[in-house]
Image (cartoon, rainbow, N blue to C red):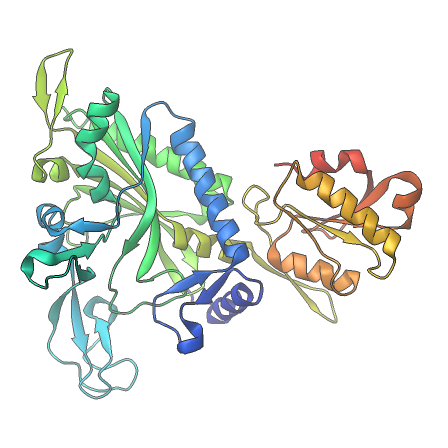
Length: 430
């Protein structure tokens, strides 16, 4: 797909200007592949995660939540195949010394300086560290490269604590780390990122029964994506080829989206068979049949940071108003960081400010994700809230003092109407 580099620059600029995302360690020159979320970025990310958890955990009886440790015993990652297989092919320019993933390079020349590329070599993407005071092979541990292994290693604990019947799933949201050769494209390819994953355990399939569960999860994924503004026509499903699939997968579908830099993976759905439980020597006992066996696994895996990036990309909108361009984030109201902003018409009229504060504080008890803004003139406040993605702005003016009505402005259309104070909650609730 065609790149929209100008749009990418605009999104990155807006994200910093309005407090969504900042470059990590920026005051010291930054650290590649690391991003810090500002107040509105945290709120947006949490809204996405909360909606995911509500949909896939809270509203289901057969999904169990988990929060496993980030640092993992090296034996876990040896058994899972990550120590051996979690590698990429690296090439280095002999002139500028920059490194690139071989599958991202066309030809034999450096894309930056035109220098010759040295011979390919394998590079394990896991972050290695050590635990304890001694520095030897026994102290070597790793930051997890995926959240899945924490789920698999707790499989027996969940069974012993809750005695679930198949099929059932274990879900978690958490950080993962990959030492990417080239961290790039804003939040898309970072070295520290967050995942929302489910391992859904099923009986060993007979006659390809796993395909039914795989299809069920495919439909659930599309339904959830629609809740945050991604209709089917802007999500592209791509089956991953045998040579590109992860070592544990028999079938994988990537759900892709057209980011400003081009089409890229947003999330994945994989059939992991019994690979992980078998390697960890874990099984399941069916007390009804008296059978002991190793379940198979369907895995929907969502990248939180990529989801935030995609949401910002999809929401980013420019309206040409003649003399100026109005920029706003057309965020779905259910995940917008701020549901409504409250303004006094004039900040130097104490009676308006007091009334606006009173209404704001009353509404905030019911809907906490709102804010009060009296900085600058009313036009500047509207533009600021547009860029934050606030669906509604509510202005308290002199008519409010007389008849108890306020002005409600819609972000997307810019249209305004008068409503009663007691109607505000019903208009801004989602």
